[in-house]
Length: 349
Ligand SMILES: C=CC1=C(C)c2cc3[nH]c(cc4nc(cc5[nH]c(cc1n2)c(C)c5CCC(=O)O)C(CCC(=O)O)=C4C)c(C)c3C=C
Ligand SMILES: [Fe+2]
Ligand SMILES: [Fe+2]
Image 1 (cartoon, rainbow, N blue to C red):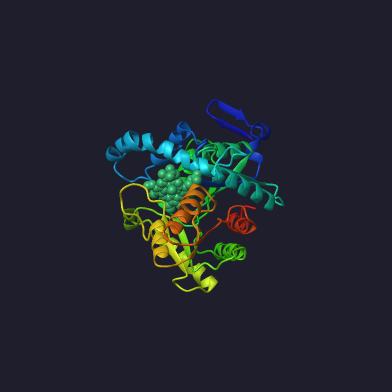
Image 2 (cartoon, rainbow, N blue to C red; image 1 turned 60 degrees about the horizontal axis):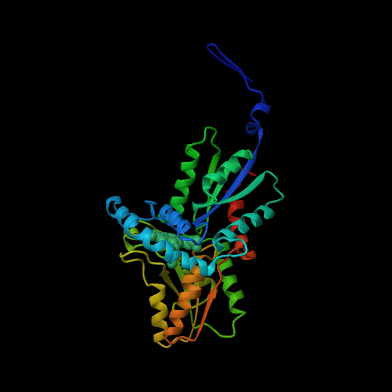
């Protein structure tokens, strides 16, 4: 092709720009993030990036930054590092969230192997591998179309939107930008509700007791975020309702709670820890907790629920506690990811 303009006459041969000629399609899975290690320096680096995000902490900077640098980043790295150490994947020297996200990427790649034009990669909103690094790999591989999947079933500005922000921020720096799509939240998709139901039924079949109550425990957000328009709690309530209908259970057998409070504000309620305490005190002896909002088991499910939650329940008189694992890279979980990806890729493959 010859381009001429004024004294400029350039000849571009296709082999000079191989990326122009490819029709590769990238699929990028993104989850929240992970520290590189449980040591204080790694934890501080991770928490600093995470808690500097204006989508996560909406307080005015003039108030928040002195608190972040003066208090949180001094006290929390050691405390959080000790919690991460309890759940760390020592074989791979990484957090479970990174292990599961990698596996989801590999399994999705295998499931889409009949489409050699698709390249699957994965990254994290905070920490490594970053979205920018993953995007660079896909770009180098010649992907001129990229589907980015924020791995959160329920939309929140604190999660889905900030992943989208980071993705588009990385695109800003590209001269030859790919076409892009993002996967929407899927709180009410049949494939997701079916997968949750199947994983509960599968887990219950392994128990030697019948839980009287199942708590669907979602990560919380401050009430003020909800009041200002974040639809996240509505998405959580809808997931629980659909699951209840799918299982044919009563309102008191499957309840919604919110966990992982942070800071002094009121968060969405009822709180999971307080509910476990109350159920035990009211005489409930057997309880199950699961985390439909977490695609992969992580600190918040393995340590806060399976560890601390079990302890709270037993300490207050409860007897049987079980944590239903997240969908992770199970066949049910991969079916959800694969179906949504295939649907969003329509017209591209
Ligand atoms: C104001 C603070 C926070 C908001 C809002 C928030 C929302 C939110 N988070 C998740 C999912 C995860 N959060 C995780 C860890 C985590 N979350 C916060 C704070 C807020 N989250 C902190 C400070 C931490 C770090 C851990 C700690 O120090 O206690 C994780 C686990 C990551 C892991 O590697 O295991 C997940 C996942 C959602 C879904 C959400 C709102 C919808
Ligand atoms: Fe969080
Ligand atoms: Fe927590």
